Picture 1 (tube, rainbow, N blue to C red):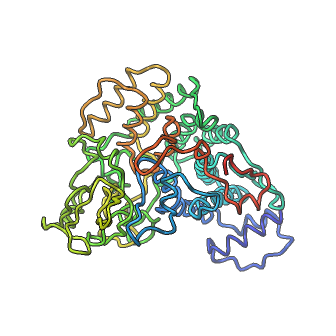
Picture 2: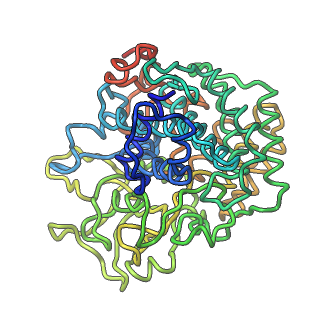
Length: 501
Protein backbone atom coordinates (compact mmCIF):
# COMPACT_ATOMS: atom_id res chain seq x y z
CA UNK A 1 0.00 0.00 0.00
CA UNK A 2 2.78 2.46 0.90
CA UNK A 3 4.51 1.77 -2.42
CA UNK A 4 1.27 2.49 -4.30
CA UNK A 5 0.73 5.77 -2.49
CA UNK A 6 4.23 7.06 -3.04
CA UNK A 7 4.21 6.11 -6.71
CA UNK A 8 0.81 7.70 -7.25
CA UNK A 9 1.91 10.92 -5.59
CA UNK A 10 5.02 11.08 -7.75
CA UNK A 11 2.88 10.66 -10.87
CA UNK A 12 0.39 13.11 -9.45
CA UNK A 13 3.09 15.75 -9.01
CA UNK A 14 4.67 15.11 -12.39
CA UNK A 15 1.40 15.90 -14.15
CA UNK A 16 0.90 19.00 -11.98
CA UNK A 17 -2.53 17.84 -10.90
CA UNK A 18 -1.85 19.52 -7.56
CA UNK A 19 0.60 22.34 -7.05
CA UNK A 20 0.67 22.99 -3.32
CA UNK A 21 2.16 19.80 -1.88
CA UNK A 22 5.12 21.09 0.13
CA UNK A 23 5.84 18.04 2.24
CA UNK A 24 8.66 15.73 1.33
CA UNK A 25 7.51 12.28 0.32
CA UNK A 26 8.74 9.76 2.85
CA UNK A 27 8.82 6.02 2.54
CA UNK A 28 6.76 5.71 5.73
CA UNK A 29 3.86 7.82 4.38
CA UNK A 30 0.61 6.13 5.39
CA UNK A 31 -2.65 5.93 3.49
CA UNK A 32 -4.36 8.32 5.92
CA UNK A 33 -1.56 10.85 5.60
CA UNK A 34 -1.59 10.66 1.82
CA UNK A 35 -5.36 11.04 1.73
CA UNK A 36 -5.04 14.34 3.54
CA UNK A 37 -2.52 15.61 1.00
CA UNK A 38 -4.16 14.51 -2.21
CA UNK A 39 -6.97 16.59 -3.70
CA UNK A 40 -9.46 14.08 -5.06
CA UNK A 41 -11.24 16.68 -7.18
CA UNK A 42 -7.96 17.36 -8.99
CA UNK A 43 -7.44 13.64 -9.56
CA UNK A 44 -10.96 13.31 -10.93
CA UNK A 45 -10.48 16.28 -13.25
CA UNK A 46 -7.24 14.68 -14.46
CA UNK A 47 -9.17 11.48 -15.20
CA UNK A 48 -11.69 13.39 -17.32
CA UNK A 49 -8.81 15.12 -19.10
CA UNK A 50 -7.24 11.71 -19.67
CA UNK A 51 -10.13 10.82 -21.99
CA UNK A 52 -9.41 13.68 -24.39
CA UNK A 53 -6.46 12.26 -26.33
CA UNK A 54 -7.63 8.65 -26.79
CA UNK A 55 -11.20 9.64 -27.74
CA UNK A 56 -11.04 13.05 -29.43
CA UNK A 57 -7.81 12.84 -31.41
CA UNK A 58 -8.25 11.80 -35.03
CA UNK A 59 -5.59 9.09 -34.74
CA UNK A 60 -6.77 7.17 -31.68
CA UNK A 61 -9.92 5.22 -30.83
CA UNK A 62 -11.97 7.17 -33.36
CA UNK A 63 -9.61 6.04 -36.12
CA UNK A 64 -9.71 2.47 -34.81
CA UNK A 65 -13.51 2.53 -35.05
CA UNK A 66 -14.02 4.49 -38.27
CA UNK A 67 -10.96 3.99 -40.51
CA UNK A 68 -11.29 0.23 -40.12
CA UNK A 69 -14.88 0.44 -41.37
CA UNK A 70 -16.90 1.26 -44.47
CA UNK A 71 -17.39 4.86 -43.32
CA UNK A 72 -13.94 6.48 -43.42
CA UNK A 73 -10.46 6.21 -44.83
CA UNK A 74 -7.31 8.27 -45.28
CA UNK A 75 -6.33 8.12 -48.96
CA UNK A 76 -2.72 8.68 -49.96
CA UNK A 77 -2.58 11.88 -52.02
CA UNK A 78 0.74 11.57 -53.81
CA UNK A 79 3.31 12.71 -51.22
CA UNK A 80 0.54 13.74 -48.81
CA UNK A 81 -0.95 11.45 -46.18
CA UNK A 82 1.21 8.44 -46.94
CA UNK A 83 2.73 8.33 -43.43
CA UNK A 84 4.33 4.97 -44.21
CA UNK A 85 0.90 3.46 -44.83
CA UNK A 86 -0.33 3.84 -41.25
CA UNK A 87 -3.78 5.05 -42.32
CA UNK A 88 -4.14 2.62 -45.23
CA UNK A 89 -3.31 -0.33 -43.00
CA UNK A 90 -6.27 0.48 -40.77
CA UNK A 91 -8.72 0.63 -43.65
CA UNK A 92 -7.25 -2.40 -45.44
CA UNK A 93 -7.12 -4.47 -42.22
CA UNK A 94 -3.36 -5.05 -42.49
CA UNK A 95 -2.26 -3.49 -39.20
CA UNK A 96 0.51 -5.15 -37.15
CA UNK A 97 1.11 -5.51 -33.38
CA UNK A 98 3.38 -2.47 -33.54
CA UNK A 99 0.91 -0.12 -35.23
CA UNK A 100 1.77 3.10 -33.41
CA UNK A 101 -1.76 4.53 -33.21
CA UNK A 102 -3.26 1.32 -31.84
CA UNK A 103 -0.38 0.96 -29.38
CA UNK A 104 -0.82 4.51 -28.11
CA UNK A 105 -4.60 4.14 -27.82
CA UNK A 106 -4.30 0.95 -25.76
CA UNK A 107 -1.76 2.55 -23.43
CA UNK A 108 -3.63 5.84 -23.00
CA UNK A 109 -6.91 4.11 -22.21
CA UNK A 110 -5.30 1.90 -19.60
CA UNK A 111 -3.77 4.97 -17.96
CA UNK A 112 -7.33 6.17 -17.30
CA UNK A 113 -8.27 2.77 -15.86
CA UNK A 114 -5.29 2.86 -13.51
CA UNK A 115 -5.74 6.52 -12.47
CA UNK A 116 -9.43 6.11 -11.64
CA UNK A 117 -8.71 2.97 -9.63
CA UNK A 118 -6.00 4.73 -7.65
CA UNK A 119 -8.30 7.67 -6.98
CA UNK A 120 -10.57 5.33 -5.04
CA UNK A 121 -7.88 4.93 -2.37
CA UNK A 122 -8.00 8.57 -1.27
CA UNK A 123 -11.33 8.86 0.53
CA UNK A 124 -13.46 10.30 -2.29
CA UNK A 125 -17.03 11.41 -1.68
CA UNK A 126 -19.69 8.95 -2.88
CA UNK A 127 -20.25 11.07 -6.01
CA UNK A 128 -16.54 11.38 -6.75
CA UNK A 129 -16.13 7.64 -6.40
CA UNK A 130 -19.15 6.99 -8.61
CA UNK A 131 -17.85 9.30 -11.35
CA UNK A 132 -14.40 7.68 -11.24
CA UNK A 133 -15.93 4.20 -11.41
CA UNK A 134 -18.07 5.28 -14.36
CA UNK A 135 -15.06 6.63 -16.30
CA UNK A 136 -13.16 3.45 -15.52
CA UNK A 137 -15.98 1.20 -16.74
CA UNK A 138 -16.49 3.30 -19.87
CA UNK A 139 -12.85 2.93 -20.85
CA UNK A 140 -12.73 -0.75 -19.90
CA UNK A 141 -15.60 -1.48 -22.28
CA UNK A 142 -13.71 0.34 -25.06
CA UNK A 143 -10.60 -1.74 -24.37
CA UNK A 144 -12.68 -4.91 -24.42
CA UNK A 145 -14.31 -3.79 -27.66
CA UNK A 146 -10.95 -3.32 -29.36
CA UNK A 147 -8.61 -5.86 -27.82
CA UNK A 148 -10.82 -8.47 -26.13
CA UNK A 149 -8.94 -8.43 -22.80
CA UNK A 150 -8.58 -5.80 -20.11
CA UNK A 151 -5.70 -5.44 -17.62
CA UNK A 152 -7.15 -4.48 -14.27
CA UNK A 153 -6.05 -3.89 -10.67
CA UNK A 154 -8.26 -3.71 -7.63
CA UNK A 155 -7.85 -0.53 -5.61
CA UNK A 156 -4.98 -0.99 -3.17
CA UNK A 157 -3.38 -3.94 -4.94
CA UNK A 158 0.40 -3.99 -5.17
CA UNK A 159 2.00 -2.39 -8.22
CA UNK A 160 4.85 -4.86 -7.79
CA UNK A 161 2.53 -7.57 -9.10
CA UNK A 162 1.38 -7.84 -12.70
CA UNK A 163 -2.15 -6.65 -13.33
CA UNK A 164 -4.70 -9.41 -13.74
CA UNK A 165 -6.48 -9.59 -17.08
CA UNK A 166 -10.25 -9.73 -17.45
CA UNK A 167 -11.83 -11.59 -20.36
CA UNK A 168 -15.06 -10.70 -22.19
CA UNK A 169 -17.54 -12.26 -19.74
CA UNK A 170 -15.75 -10.86 -16.69
CA UNK A 171 -15.53 -7.38 -18.19
CA UNK A 172 -19.18 -7.20 -19.27
CA UNK A 173 -20.31 -8.51 -15.89
CA UNK A 174 -18.07 -5.97 -14.15
CA UNK A 175 -19.37 -3.04 -16.21
CA UNK A 176 -23.02 -3.97 -15.72
CA UNK A 177 -22.56 -4.53 -11.98
CA UNK A 178 -20.69 -1.22 -11.62
CA UNK A 179 -23.46 0.73 -13.33
CA UNK A 180 -26.06 -0.81 -11.03
CA UNK A 181 -23.90 -0.12 -7.98
CA UNK A 182 -23.07 3.54 -8.66
CA UNK A 183 -26.19 4.92 -10.32
CA UNK A 184 -27.71 6.30 -7.12
CA UNK A 185 -24.51 8.23 -6.35
CA UNK A 186 -24.10 9.72 -9.82
CA UNK A 187 -25.51 13.19 -10.49
CA UNK A 188 -28.46 13.69 -12.80
CA UNK A 189 -26.32 15.97 -14.98
CA UNK A 190 -24.89 17.93 -16.66
CA UNK A 191 -24.20 15.98 -19.81
CA UNK A 192 -20.47 16.68 -19.65
CA UNK A 193 -20.11 14.86 -16.31
CA UNK A 194 -20.57 11.18 -15.69
CA UNK A 195 -24.29 11.04 -14.91
CA UNK A 196 -27.12 8.62 -14.23
CA UNK A 197 -28.32 8.44 -17.81
CA UNK A 198 -24.79 7.99 -19.13
CA UNK A 199 -24.58 4.95 -16.84
CA UNK A 200 -27.83 3.63 -18.29
CA UNK A 201 -26.51 3.97 -21.84
CA UNK A 202 -23.20 2.31 -20.95
CA UNK A 203 -25.13 -0.61 -19.48
CA UNK A 204 -27.14 -0.85 -22.71
CA UNK A 205 -23.92 -0.85 -24.76
CA UNK A 206 -22.41 -3.63 -22.65
CA UNK A 207 -25.49 -5.85 -22.89
CA UNK A 208 -26.15 -5.20 -26.59
CA UNK A 209 -22.57 -6.05 -27.55
CA UNK A 210 -22.17 -8.91 -25.07
CA UNK A 211 -22.93 -11.60 -27.63
CA UNK A 212 -20.33 -10.18 -30.02
CA UNK A 213 -17.71 -9.92 -27.30
CA UNK A 214 -18.25 -13.54 -26.30
CA UNK A 215 -18.21 -14.86 -29.89
CA UNK A 216 -17.08 -12.33 -32.49
CA UNK A 217 -17.21 -14.78 -35.39
CA UNK A 218 -20.84 -15.74 -34.75
CA UNK A 219 -22.52 -13.42 -32.24
CA UNK A 220 -25.66 -14.59 -30.49
CA UNK A 221 -27.96 -12.43 -28.41
CA UNK A 222 -29.67 -13.76 -25.29
CA UNK A 223 -33.28 -12.71 -24.92
CA UNK A 224 -32.64 -11.71 -21.30
CA UNK A 225 -29.92 -9.29 -22.38
CA UNK A 226 -32.07 -7.81 -25.14
CA UNK A 227 -35.01 -7.42 -22.78
CA UNK A 228 -32.74 -5.60 -20.33
CA UNK A 229 -31.62 -3.25 -23.12
CA UNK A 230 -35.27 -2.46 -23.89
CA UNK A 231 -36.06 -1.90 -20.22
CA UNK A 232 -33.22 0.58 -19.76
CA UNK A 233 -34.12 2.35 -23.02
CA UNK A 234 -37.68 2.73 -21.77
CA UNK A 235 -36.40 4.45 -18.63
CA UNK A 236 -34.60 7.01 -20.78
CA UNK A 237 -37.51 7.45 -23.18
CA UNK A 238 -40.04 7.69 -20.38
CA UNK A 239 -38.03 10.32 -18.50
CA UNK A 240 -39.07 12.97 -21.04
CA UNK A 241 -35.63 14.60 -20.74
CA UNK A 242 -34.56 13.94 -24.32
CA UNK A 243 -35.97 14.49 -27.76
CA UNK A 244 -34.68 14.29 -31.32
CA UNK A 245 -33.39 17.67 -32.44
CA UNK A 246 -35.09 19.57 -35.26
CA UNK A 247 -31.61 20.51 -36.48
CA UNK A 248 -29.52 17.34 -36.50
CA UNK A 249 -26.22 19.26 -36.47
CA UNK A 250 -27.11 21.21 -33.33
CA UNK A 251 -26.04 18.08 -31.46
CA UNK A 252 -22.43 18.70 -32.51
CA UNK A 253 -22.27 22.48 -32.88
CA UNK A 254 -20.50 25.08 -30.74
CA UNK A 255 -22.43 25.42 -27.47
CA UNK A 256 -24.11 22.06 -28.05
CA UNK A 257 -24.15 21.66 -24.28
CA UNK A 258 -26.79 24.41 -24.23
CA UNK A 259 -28.69 23.91 -27.49
CA UNK A 260 -28.98 20.12 -27.80
CA UNK A 261 -31.76 18.21 -26.06
CA UNK A 262 -30.50 14.94 -27.54
CA UNK A 263 -27.03 14.54 -26.05
CA UNK A 264 -26.72 12.29 -22.99
CA UNK A 265 -22.98 12.20 -22.33
CA UNK A 266 -20.33 14.49 -23.78
CA UNK A 267 -16.80 15.68 -23.11
CA UNK A 268 -16.69 19.31 -22.05
CA UNK A 269 -14.75 21.61 -24.35
CA UNK A 270 -14.62 25.27 -23.33
CA UNK A 271 -14.35 27.70 -26.22
CA UNK A 272 -11.07 29.62 -26.24
CA UNK A 273 -9.99 28.02 -22.96
CA UNK A 274 -9.50 24.24 -23.09
CA UNK A 275 -10.60 21.29 -25.15
CA UNK A 276 -9.69 18.00 -26.66
CA UNK A 277 -8.80 17.86 -30.33
CA UNK A 278 -12.41 18.06 -31.53
CA UNK A 279 -11.33 20.55 -34.21
CA UNK A 280 -9.63 17.60 -35.94
CA UNK A 281 -13.08 16.45 -37.05
CA UNK A 282 -13.12 19.24 -39.63
CA UNK A 283 -9.40 19.93 -40.09
CA UNK A 284 -8.79 16.30 -41.06
CA UNK A 285 -11.09 16.55 -44.06
CA UNK A 286 -11.16 20.15 -45.37
CA UNK A 287 -9.01 21.18 -48.34
CA UNK A 288 -6.15 23.62 -47.93
CA UNK A 289 -8.06 26.33 -49.83
CA UNK A 290 -11.21 26.14 -47.72
CA UNK A 291 -11.94 28.20 -44.62
CA UNK A 292 -10.38 27.11 -42.37
CA UNK A 293 -7.45 25.72 -44.32
CA UNK A 294 -7.58 22.04 -43.48
CA UNK A 295 -5.26 19.06 -43.77
CA UNK A 296 -7.01 17.65 -46.88
CA UNK A 297 -6.99 14.11 -45.59
CA UNK A 298 -9.89 11.91 -44.59
CA UNK A 299 -12.96 11.04 -46.62
CA UNK A 300 -16.03 8.90 -46.40
CA UNK A 301 -16.84 6.22 -48.97
CA UNK A 302 -19.24 6.54 -51.88
CA UNK A 303 -21.47 3.69 -50.73
CA UNK A 304 -22.26 5.44 -47.45
CA UNK A 305 -23.01 8.70 -49.26
CA UNK A 306 -25.23 6.90 -51.79
CA UNK A 307 -27.27 5.32 -48.99
CA UNK A 308 -28.84 8.70 -48.12
CA UNK A 309 -31.91 10.14 -49.79
CA UNK A 310 -31.47 13.73 -50.96
CA UNK A 311 -34.23 14.81 -48.56
CA UNK A 312 -32.33 13.39 -45.58
CA UNK A 313 -31.23 16.32 -43.39
CA UNK A 314 -28.24 14.31 -42.21
CA UNK A 315 -26.78 14.32 -45.73
CA UNK A 316 -26.38 18.03 -46.39
CA UNK A 317 -27.59 21.22 -44.72
CA UNK A 318 -26.53 24.83 -44.52
CA UNK A 319 -25.60 25.76 -40.97
CA UNK A 320 -25.85 29.32 -39.69
CA UNK A 321 -22.52 30.54 -38.35
CA UNK A 322 -20.63 28.24 -40.72
CA UNK A 323 -22.10 28.24 -44.24
CA UNK A 324 -22.58 32.02 -44.20
CA UNK A 325 -18.97 32.42 -43.03
CA UNK A 326 -17.22 29.99 -45.35
CA UNK A 327 -19.65 28.43 -47.82
CA UNK A 328 -19.13 25.03 -46.15
CA UNK A 329 -22.27 22.98 -45.50
CA UNK A 330 -22.79 20.51 -42.69
CA UNK A 331 -22.88 16.82 -43.61
CA UNK A 332 -21.12 15.64 -46.75
CA UNK A 333 -19.07 17.83 -49.11
CA UNK A 334 -19.42 16.47 -52.64
CA UNK A 335 -18.81 18.11 -56.01
CA UNK A 336 -17.77 21.70 -56.63
CA UNK A 337 -17.00 23.69 -53.50
CA UNK A 338 -17.75 27.39 -53.07
CA UNK A 339 -16.82 30.23 -50.74
CA UNK A 340 -19.35 32.23 -48.69
CA UNK A 341 -20.15 34.47 -51.65
CA UNK A 342 -20.85 31.55 -54.01
CA UNK A 343 -17.53 31.84 -55.83
CA UNK A 344 -16.16 28.46 -57.02
CA UNK A 345 -13.04 27.40 -55.17
CA UNK A 346 -9.90 26.00 -56.78
CA UNK A 347 -7.28 23.52 -55.66
CA UNK A 348 -3.60 24.39 -55.31
CA UNK A 349 -2.99 24.00 -59.05
CA UNK A 350 -5.90 26.19 -60.09
CA UNK A 351 -8.23 23.32 -60.99
CA UNK A 352 -11.86 23.28 -59.78
CA UNK A 353 -12.10 22.13 -56.17
CA UNK A 354 -14.54 19.33 -57.00
CA UNK A 355 -14.67 16.46 -54.51
CA UNK A 356 -15.25 13.09 -56.19
CA UNK A 357 -16.94 9.92 -54.96
CA UNK A 358 -13.84 7.91 -55.83
CA UNK A 359 -11.46 7.78 -52.91
CA UNK A 360 -8.54 6.48 -54.94
CA UNK A 361 -8.10 7.36 -58.62
CA UNK A 362 -5.43 5.17 -60.15
CA UNK A 363 -5.07 6.85 -63.57
CA UNK A 364 -1.72 8.51 -64.22
CA UNK A 365 -1.87 12.25 -63.64
CA UNK A 366 -5.18 12.12 -61.74
CA UNK A 367 -5.91 14.95 -59.32
CA UNK A 368 -5.45 13.27 -55.96
CA UNK A 369 -6.19 16.49 -54.08
CA UNK A 370 -9.91 16.14 -54.69
CA UNK A 371 -10.56 12.42 -54.30
CA UNK A 372 -13.19 11.45 -51.77
CA UNK A 373 -16.31 12.99 -50.27
CA UNK A 374 -15.54 15.01 -47.15
CA UNK A 375 -17.46 15.03 -43.87
CA UNK A 376 -18.43 17.92 -41.57
CA UNK A 377 -20.25 16.33 -38.63
CA UNK A 378 -19.26 19.02 -36.13
CA UNK A 379 -20.15 22.55 -37.35
CA UNK A 380 -17.01 24.65 -37.31
CA UNK A 381 -16.33 27.00 -34.39
CA UNK A 382 -14.82 30.11 -36.01
CA UNK A 383 -14.65 32.12 -32.78
CA UNK A 384 -12.64 30.00 -30.36
CA UNK A 385 -9.37 29.15 -32.09
CA UNK A 386 -7.86 25.74 -31.43
CA UNK A 387 -9.88 25.29 -28.22
CA UNK A 388 -13.30 24.87 -29.78
CA UNK A 389 -16.61 25.12 -27.95
CA UNK A 390 -18.12 21.95 -29.43
CA UNK A 391 -18.51 19.39 -26.65
CA UNK A 392 -17.46 15.99 -27.95
CA UNK A 393 -20.42 13.61 -28.16
CA UNK A 394 -20.16 10.12 -26.68
CA UNK A 395 -23.84 9.17 -26.34
CA UNK A 396 -27.02 10.54 -27.94
CA UNK A 397 -30.72 9.83 -27.59
CA UNK A 398 -30.96 8.72 -31.22
CA UNK A 399 -28.56 5.87 -30.42
CA UNK A 400 -30.80 4.84 -27.53
CA UNK A 401 -33.76 4.55 -29.91
CA UNK A 402 -31.71 2.54 -32.40
CA UNK A 403 -30.35 0.24 -29.70
CA UNK A 404 -33.87 -0.41 -28.46
CA UNK A 405 -34.98 -1.10 -32.04
CA UNK A 406 -32.13 -3.57 -32.45
CA UNK A 407 -32.94 -5.37 -29.20
CA UNK A 408 -36.58 -5.62 -30.27
CA UNK A 409 -35.60 -6.92 -33.70
CA UNK A 410 -33.33 -9.56 -32.18
CA UNK A 411 -36.26 -10.85 -30.09
CA UNK A 412 -38.66 -11.03 -33.02
CA UNK A 413 -40.56 -7.80 -32.32
CA UNK A 414 -40.16 -6.36 -35.79
CA UNK A 415 -43.20 -4.08 -35.75
CA UNK A 416 -42.24 -1.98 -32.71
CA UNK A 417 -38.62 -1.91 -33.95
CA UNK A 418 -39.74 -0.56 -37.33
CA UNK A 419 -41.84 2.11 -35.63
CA UNK A 420 -38.80 3.40 -33.74
CA UNK A 421 -36.63 3.53 -36.84
CA UNK A 422 -39.34 5.32 -38.81
CA UNK A 423 -39.80 7.82 -35.98
CA UNK A 424 -36.13 8.66 -36.36
CA UNK A 425 -36.18 8.73 -40.16
CA UNK A 426 -39.23 11.00 -40.24
CA UNK A 427 -37.49 13.48 -37.95
CA UNK A 428 -34.44 13.42 -40.23
CA UNK A 429 -36.48 14.08 -43.39
CA UNK A 430 -36.14 10.57 -44.82
CA UNK A 431 -39.03 8.47 -46.12
CA UNK A 432 -40.34 5.70 -43.89
CA UNK A 433 -39.30 2.08 -44.37
CA UNK A 434 -41.85 -0.60 -45.24
CA UNK A 435 -39.99 -3.30 -43.31
CA UNK A 436 -36.96 -3.76 -41.11
CA UNK A 437 -34.18 -6.34 -41.23
CA UNK A 438 -30.76 -6.60 -39.64
CA UNK A 439 -29.25 -5.25 -42.87
CA UNK A 440 -31.53 -2.21 -43.06
CA UNK A 441 -31.05 -1.47 -39.37
CA UNK A 442 -27.26 -1.57 -39.75
CA UNK A 443 -27.58 0.82 -42.68
CA UNK A 444 -29.70 3.18 -40.59
CA UNK A 445 -27.13 3.15 -37.81
CA UNK A 446 -24.57 4.06 -40.46
CA UNK A 447 -26.62 7.03 -41.60
CA UNK A 448 -27.48 8.30 -38.12
CA UNK A 449 -24.14 7.72 -36.38
CA UNK A 450 -21.57 8.21 -39.15
CA UNK A 451 -18.17 9.39 -37.91
CA UNK A 452 -19.20 9.19 -34.24
CA UNK A 453 -16.90 6.29 -33.34
CA UNK A 454 -19.38 3.38 -33.35
CA UNK A 455 -19.09 1.85 -36.82
CA UNK A 456 -16.53 -0.93 -36.25
CA UNK A 457 -18.47 -2.21 -33.23
CA UNK A 458 -21.70 -2.16 -35.23
CA UNK A 459 -20.18 -4.04 -38.17
CA UNK A 460 -18.80 -6.75 -35.89
CA UNK A 461 -22.10 -7.13 -34.04
CA UNK A 462 -23.98 -7.49 -37.34
CA UNK A 463 -21.41 -9.90 -38.79
CA UNK A 464 -20.21 -7.59 -41.59
CA UNK A 465 -16.77 -6.43 -40.44
CA UNK A 466 -14.75 -8.94 -42.46
CA UNK A 467 -16.56 -8.40 -45.77
CA UNK A 468 -15.09 -6.48 -48.71
CA UNK A 469 -15.92 -2.83 -49.39
CA UNK A 470 -14.31 0.09 -51.19
CA UNK A 471 -10.51 -0.13 -51.03
CA UNK A 472 -10.70 -3.22 -48.78
CA UNK A 473 -10.72 -6.92 -49.62
CA UNK A 474 -12.35 -9.54 -47.41
CA UNK A 475 -10.26 -9.94 -44.26
CA UNK A 476 -9.41 -12.81 -41.91
CA UNK A 477 -11.14 -13.50 -38.61
CA UNK A 478 -8.09 -12.35 -36.64
CA UNK A 479 -9.07 -8.78 -37.60
CA UNK A 480 -12.08 -8.97 -35.29
CA UNK A 481 -9.61 -8.04 -32.54
CA UNK A 482 -6.69 -5.66 -32.50
CA UNK A 483 -3.31 -7.14 -31.54
CA UNK A 484 -1.99 -6.62 -28.03
CA UNK A 485 0.94 -4.20 -28.41
CA UNK A 486 4.36 -5.82 -28.17
CA UNK A 487 5.44 -3.52 -25.36
CA UNK A 488 2.35 -4.42 -23.32
CA UNK A 489 3.02 -8.14 -23.71
CA UNK A 490 6.56 -7.59 -22.46
CA UNK A 491 5.43 -5.65 -19.40
CA UNK A 492 2.57 -7.93 -18.31
CA UNK A 493 2.86 -11.71 -18.87
CA UNK A 494 -0.83 -12.11 -17.96
CA UNK A 495 -1.67 -10.60 -21.36
CA UNK A 496 -1.72 -13.06 -24.23
CA UNK A 497 -1.40 -12.12 -27.87
CA UNK A 498 -4.66 -12.39 -29.77
CA UNK A 499 -4.87 -15.23 -32.34
CA UNK A 500 -3.44 -14.53 -35.77
CA UNK A 501 -0.80 -12.04 -34.68
